[in-house]
Image (cartoon, rainbow, N blue to C red; front, side, top):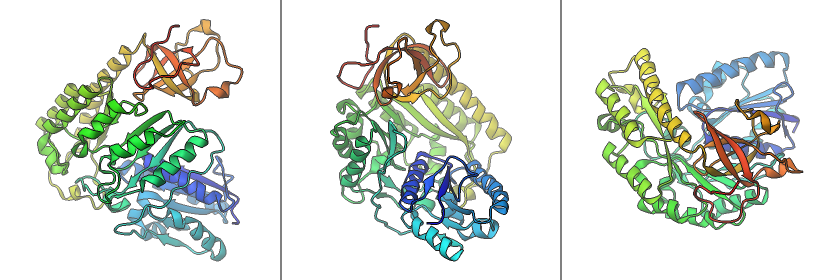
Length: 472
């Protein structure tokens, strides 16, 4: 391979992050080294997202900047992958002469061959071929230059739900699950390389295995739970209509499964939910939330919400606010509706004006902020078991001056809350803290994080779930 260094820019969801890791592993097999410097790169790949208009606009804005860079570096190879690539295909080459290749969401395995062709023939390539029922490739674990504590693992791809606002079935294909043994092999390899937490990814993990008569999702979780050296398991995303009683019970029965579920509701109005083709009612959703909390009282619940869906009335929006008040989410990802190519909702009448969508979004975010802060403040004074990711990315304001510590670490609670913390006595090897479970007393609560002091850097073994109370 002529290119010595590649730069990878990822836009979008966790699935794209995972796909980018797979891209990097495949490029490494060609002898190309990843760089954090765009200026140093001989090959630049932009992995794109088209779920919302803003993400697509961000991708084309970056590609415009890369076009200027290529005028000064003629041998630079630029590629576009991901959902925008799958959606637009040949149109990207026509719109942007600086682009050398476009590859879709099912073409990652074919990427090395494309690049070799381009280097040999200086051609331009589009590969957005999709199989109706593709086999899931054997994903590669690879090795990381830096030890990582937590990693994403894709267990399925595509979607069969066809929600009215969503393009995923069109850009990622029909739902397909990986073989359980392939998933287990990947996770074991990651654990051998120092990973202590995995997040299982799928557009709807709750329906894992159903089409191919594989293990059901709760059974897969139970098998992963037995992997020695793995400390924590998370997953996303769950479709409410497929949340089974067995999966709810897994939060009680599996000691490594973190008590946090992301359960997107999208709207609190049954009328809007029907127009969205979500296949459940508000009442059914609330019933499943109640069962989750009855089974696992400490469970944290987060969700997605779309405001301004075509035809959403003020009464519909008020029902959404009431649902948020009823559930009291730990966190909420809320977005303004935007038309997406090929999504059925493009054709729906009674579109909501942009100013009204912005107003409703802000009202919703302000409401959720109260619940997020309240739930975080409840933890002040408690001791939480934190899986340490490494050094904190930023210094938390208000750190007690008496500690005299310049270093802070960052990790997450079992309920997925970010915690920045310090300790009075630094260990001899600070890097050894990464991947360790540490008892941290929570002293301060902020909107999106917690802050505290490590009171036990070597907690005793025991059940990983629940709040651990160590003596200071």
